[in-house]
Length: 125
Image (cartoon, rainbow, N blue to C red; front, side):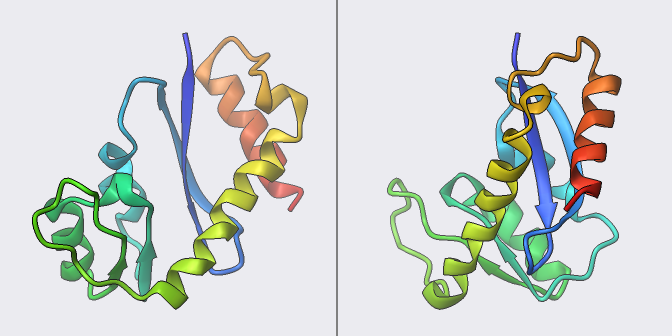
């Protein structure tokens, strides 16, 4: 009954790639798909992306994982707090696209049409 938008943005908060999943799918499941073929310097993510698999994926790409540790980790992993502050640009991207009523309330019945509306909205930025 719900849809989740997973997005990859650049350092200026512009969408590079996105994918849609069902609302109950966890965010971290789409990380590998979104990062495939990309060459970032840093990968910023919130605590939902704190897993050894994602950290290994980012390290293998030659990038730096800037992800705070979840509270259930036995030992906190250090991250660059100054760089992490730039993650607000991702949240700003989502605020931007959700301002458009068709995106925020999902008027489109099919994933194809909804994805098309998101693509159209992203092109406005």
